[in-house]
Image (cartoon, rainbow, N blue to C red; front, side, top):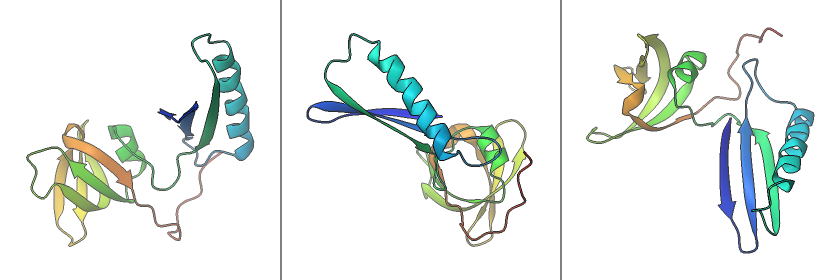
Length: 139
């Protein structure tokens, strides 16, 4: 789950991106979560004025930030921005297998392979191909 808050002129927007291990989040689940969050926010006296809540599935271009994410999305495309002093800073390719607890193989677009430590990543985003055949998730 990823949460953020943005302030608009006269209100705030609470954005919540949710995910599930078995793929996708149904719209009705997002609606239920939105109502639960709204009920909790309504109890907070520090929230004056109006606010909006946006609850949605994380989507195909979601951020990923821990070893479990890289394990889960092995074989998928990604764009990775490394912390300094990496040169080049941006890597585009395919997530490979995990190597140890916090490193994984990243196959660059040109076919070269590189081991990347999760701690060296500033921001990583999936670049999933919507037409790629994937194994069916167990329910």
